[in-house]
Image (tube, rainbow, N blue to C red; front, side, top):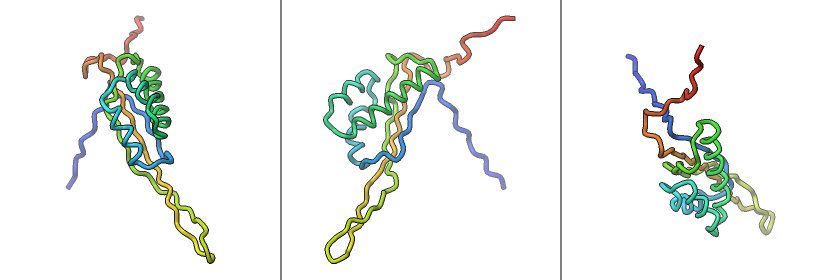
Length: 138
């Protein structure tokens, strides 16, 4: 018996950036991510630059990276970008030993997280974008 799997359609109006093994608790990163979800690119930059949390800097770098991917790879304008999806997943915990009294040791877990930022272009309606803008005439 064969099982047919549905192929995922590529969204031509979405671009993403993925940061893996960021040395931070996923809980603390989610606190910042919840503030920027479904906001425009420019508004997100203002929010992240003014928030006092340590998690803002790696998230800001990811948002910049996703916008650079959008403008360079897909030709989107930064003014039309919106954060359509932002998620934080827990990564592996780095385990370290801390020396204690009488030759014993404590296990210290340093959490990591994976952050995904997806930007969507609002100026285009799905399915109407022509990737090959220039056609060569021979």
